[in-house]
Amino acid sequence: MKVAVLKEPEVIQLEDIKKPEADNDYLIVEVKACGICGSDVRYYKGENPWALHTLGKNLPNPPNIILGHEWGGIVHEVKNPEFKHLLGKRVAVLAYNTCGVCEYCRNGNYNLCKKTMHIGHGAGWGTMDYYPGGMAGYCQIWNTHVCEIPDSMSFEEATLLDPISVGIHAITKSDIRPGDDVVVLGTGAVGLSIVQAVKAFGADKVICTDVYEGALEIARDVGVTRAVNIQQESLEDGMREIGMNGANVVFDTVGTAETQKQALHILRESGTLVNLVANMTQASYELMDLAGEKRLITSANNNSSDFLLGIKLIQNGTIQAKKMITHVLPLDEVQTGFDIMLNKEQQKVMKVVLVP
Image (cartoon, rainbow, N blue to C red; front, side):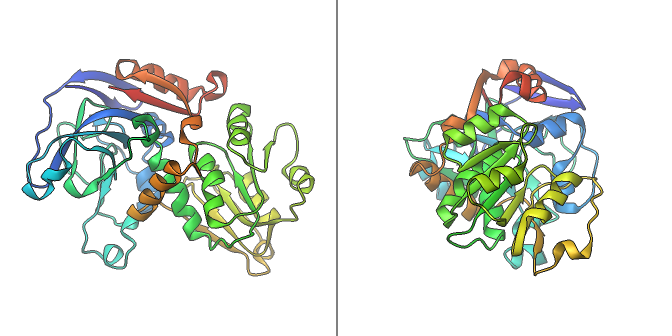
C-alpha cells in the first residue's frame, strides 16, 4: 500500500509498504480521508508536540513515522469475533490508546497517560520499521477505538473530529456557564471548533482574533459574534463594539507572550484563561494580573466523550465542519499539502485533507 512517511525533519516521501493485518487487538480500516493537522506540520519541522503537551519536554522523533491522526474510513478487516459487527462500517478513529493502569488512567485523566501509544505520532510504540498513521491506504486501529459516523457526515468532515474534540475538551476544563462571554485567541482549526462548540455550552457573545483574514472569514460564516483582525484593529475595540465588558473565558490557541498578556488583561474577575499551546516560550506576569480569583489552566489532548460529542455537534449542525475544509488533495500530493500548510496565509488555507 502507499504511505506518506516522515523520514526526518522536512523530508516526507511516498513509499509502498506491506498492508497491515488485523489481529485480536487491532482491526484494519481502509482510509478514505486524512487531515493534515497543525501538529503534523510541527512534526514535519522536527518538533514533538505530543511530548511537549503530555510529558512537558521536547523529545526527538524516530524516523519513518507515517503521519496522520485525523482520519476516517471503512472497516476493512476484523479478526476478533467480538468486533465482527464493525466490518464494513463507516468510522472515525480515536487515535491514541493508554496503559489503563497508571494513576492518570485510573483517575479518569487518561489523556495525560505517559505511556500513550499514538497513531501518526510515533509515541509509545517502541522501535518499529514504520510507525502507523492515517496518511496511508490502510491503517490498523484498536478494536475499541473506532466510532461509527452517520451517513450524513462525509469522511472529509470526519477528519475534523480530532481538532473539534480537542476544542471541546478545553471547553470542559473552562468551567463555562450559560450566558458567559468568550474570547478565542487564534482562529485555526481548534479555535474555529471552540468558536462554534461553546454555543452548545451556553456561551453568549463570542469573539475571535487572528492575523489571517481567511480564517476570520470562515469564523464570520459559521456565526461568531465578532471576528477581529488584530493587525487592523484592537481586540478591545472589537469587544466594546459588541458590548462585551471583559471575558468570562479566554482560550489561547496561539501561545505567545503577547497573547498571554492580552488574555489576562481582558479576563474578568473569577474568569478562566485556558491555554491550549505548550511550547518553550517564556511568558512573564505579575501576581496582580491574577487578582480577583482569575484562573489560569491548561488543556491537553481529548478523551472519548469529547470525540462522541463532536460527532453529535457536526450531525446537528452546531459545528459546520464542511466550511472549515479548504483543500482536498490526493495522497500523492502530500508534499503539496504540507507546502500549502506552511504558507497558509498566501494559500488561503484552513484545513487540508488528503484522500488516498
